[in-house]
Amino acid sequence: AQSVTQPDIHITVSEGASLELRCNYSYGATPYLFWYVQSPGQGLQLLLKYFSGDTLVQGIKGFEAEFKRSQSSFNLRKPSVHWSDAAEYFCAVGAPGGSQGNLIFGKGTKLSVKP
Amino acid sequence: DSGVTQTPKHLITATGQRVTLRCSPRSGDLSVYWYQQSLDQGLQFLIQYYNGEERAKGNILERFSAQQFPDLHSELNLSSLELGDSALYFCASSPAHTLYGYTFGSGTRLTVV
Image 1 (spheres, helix red, strand yellow):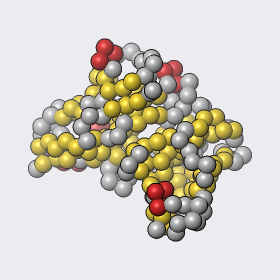
Image 2: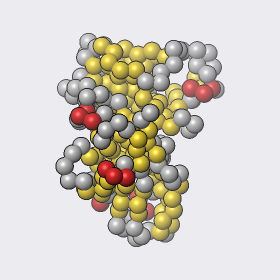
Image 3: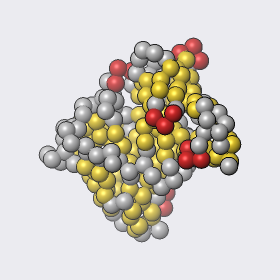
């Protein structure tokens, strides 16, 4: 079955420290991959997406993610975390080629930032 | 502002009642998708409409139904509400029936008491 695993439910990092959020997927083929961020009480904002091509993807707010086919992973990184990055982060996958429109989401990783 | 409008933002209702959530897609988008975000199930796809027709179905309960109107707005109807239906309901839209240009609305928070 298709699934997305975010192994870390909650991560705390110090402001200015680097960040890596993990995402692994199970899919029949290489899916389209997404990272979303959700602040408390807010909607989902797209950080970045991978459809094809360069496996290192740059997104908004200084985030990047790397697709590793051999590991079925799409980890999200940021070199220096800001207090405003505290939020919940969701990894999602969709059908390769975008032939179907629904996304499968991971359970999310909540990020706390220490001053 | 993503361009996808969901109303109301908050809704409080009693068990057994029926509610309607509304979604207006981004201008030009033909597809509308509904998702439910709950504490125990996380974010789950419910249903998709494309240009007025149901295109895909996910984990949608029989008590729930949806439709897309000729002006492309969509409504999600939830009936015989239970406490467990309390959740954040998101709508997304895209130009076609694919993942290109996928945009989420800000959601409707439903509380069943």
